Amino acid sequence: MPRSLLTMAAVLALSLRSDPLSLQTLPSTTGVGGDSGVHGGEDETGPYHLVDKWPQPFARPGYIWGSQGGVFAESPDRIFLLGRGELKLPGRVPGEFAGAWGMLGSAIDPTPELRNCVAIVDGSGKLIESWTQWDHLFQGGRGPHSIHINPYDPERNVWVVDDWRQQIFVFSNDGKRLVRTFGEAGVEGTDEKHFGRPTGIAWLPDGTFFVTDGYTNARVLKFDKNGTFLAAWGSRGTGPGQFQVPHAVAVDRTRRVFVADRSNHRIQIFDENGKFILTWRSIRSPEFLMMTVDNHVWVADGVTNKFLKYSLNGALQSSWGTYGTFPGGIWGVHQFSVDSDGNLYAAEALGGRTQKFQPKIDADSSKLIGLPVQRMPTKAN
Image 1: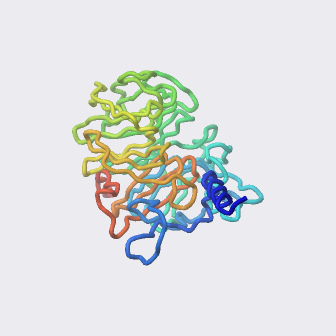
Image 2: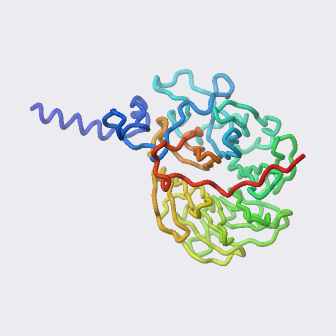
Image 3: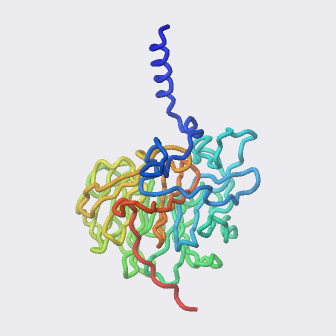
């Protein structure tokens, strides 16, 4: 065969090999470019640098973290990691294995051992707390779904949503007390006291909150600051005000309610009483929404594996993200959070890891995910 044909065949073979593991041996290119003197590379992490080997391992020996349901950065030195248990590692792993189950396959497929479901690390990724005393609450399910702190709550109670167990747990900030429980363990329902696999929460400044509910009920619930049921809206379908997996919720300063209608590939907007206002279409899989203080909506897309920035009018203004299980790539971001220093934390349900990204020194600030609504100071003891 002529040399030119052999070369073309080799190039074609390499181009067809697109599985994530084939990328593991490539060196990181997250900081390449500009006047660094390094040539080549790609812009895999947008305006951020990946923080390498974060967090530090804390799973039981022979195990690794499973699917990551959520993350919440209370401060740059107190980051809540919400894990769906731990997975036992096989006897042999690939030589390029970098410590995340996603390099072996989807992290949501194996059955986990529900351990270290709520863990807290410092800015360096060192484990400082693990609320193992509450792991029993998640038994019988697949692990918790998302984690939140009401930004207007001086107590900074920690809210954990468990879709499979049909409950929402409210813990004291130090994890010593279970303050309140919404829903009945393992019991699905359509009344005001039960859920159908709930997914997310968002608050108004007066303490009113909304729950997306969820995988089976396809509705939004509204409660007052005391947890008293006020209203519900939505049904299964594709029309305005209908949902196919309402997966996350956020509110803006005018009290409009933004709902990630995941399997309908859109975001729907309502007033606070559930009156339909508008739909943003053609968003492949909106997994999580975050409203920022600079009045933008950031979305994690679980299909394109990108972070998307929208104006409050729905105009797409920027996006970044690269699919992959290599460090700095992303696979199925389920929830993300930004601390007061601008560091980004991304929990991957499919990749089985939470990664930390720091803004590049010369980053275009308009490309960075903005700060969330500022949290109230901790109530004095």
